[in-house]
Length: 143
Image (tube, one colour):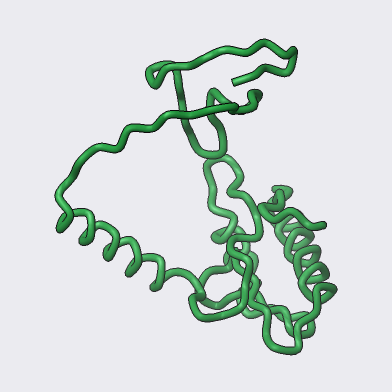
C-alpha cells in the first residue's frame, strides 16, 4: 500500500478493519494483495447463496432496468424506508419510476431518458428532505 504522502507499507489481516462504507484502507492505494480462501462445505455454501438470492429477488426489482440502490443509507436508517414513508413508491417522471418493490430503486421503463431519472432523483431528495430534514446522499455517481 502507499499513503497520500508516498510512504509504502504493508498491513496484515489483523490490522484491517471493515465496516459499512468504510475500512482502515480508505486513505490508501493498494499496490498488491494476497488473499487466502478458507475451505467450506460446498452444499452449505450453495444453500447460503440460494437463500441470499431468494431474499434479494423478493425485495428488489429484479428483471427491470435499474442501476441498483440510488441513495446511501443515512446513519441508522434505510434510505428506502425514508422514501417509502414519504409516500413516493410508484412516483413517476417520464419513463423513470420509483420501484413499488424497493423504494431506493428507480426503474427505467423503455421510454425513460437520463433526464427523467435525474429529475426523479431530485424530486425524491427534495421530498425526503422536506418531510424528515435528512439530505439523501447519492449512491450512484453521475457522469
